[in-house]
Length: 342
Image (cartoon, rainbow, N blue to C red; front, side, top):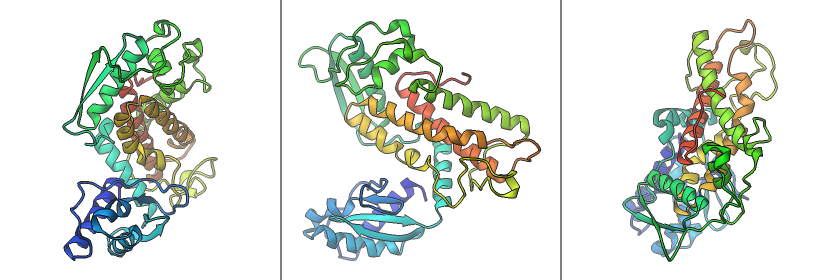
């Protein structure tokens, strides 16, 4: 079950509770599911019970218990635990299927994975000063707003409503990609560093790690084609089993949640937050999180030595390609090239 499917499952639980007369509320347009916060448990959590408590005229914990009973009957749900003031923490059956479904969803949507309707029908007016960082931030915010169904208009004049700390000097000598990263990666209240370290082709450079991870995925896809196999979502397998040729460090067994699962799942929320809060820096930092979770997987994608391609290799390639699509889409929203070669 993908996050989008789980969201629909929770919404269906609300609908069934309303139809049964257990909750007297208007059906919400959408239900958000996220990774569990501090004190939470399971695979996903939702605050829908807290949102519905006031209109239902019931305590949040009572609403949570009503929805918990409905969710326990839902296909694909293994357990539901109520924590805190009324958060529903949901554990899904077969975590391998969760990751597989997520990879399938990303591969189907490509670089548009994570786009939503948080700003549907809205026009966002961005009034910025005549300053290079403000212009670059506004351009990226406009792209983000579009991912959420809105439209942005960029204007100059008072009162200014988007004024990041200005760049200390002209970033143009860094080139377009490094310049935009230098201006977008820091939070708006932080002064950007317009320095040559953004051009260093080593792991110490965050932009290099993000672009390198994407380029490596593209290379692996080409190499897999040369070896006669293609990506297919499925169980990642364990490098300690005989079918993948002995142990290799950093491999994740099929029954264990992969480090990429959380940032890939979180991508939709990050895009919506970055768009509504006019904060492309959040997307930039998120892409770095995805890249850092992706890089350890890459050495395990292709067969080594006399190995033959297996279902696990195809599944790892599919996961890598899904992460690569997220990186490509995110870099595009920042106005930065996602290279095929690096």
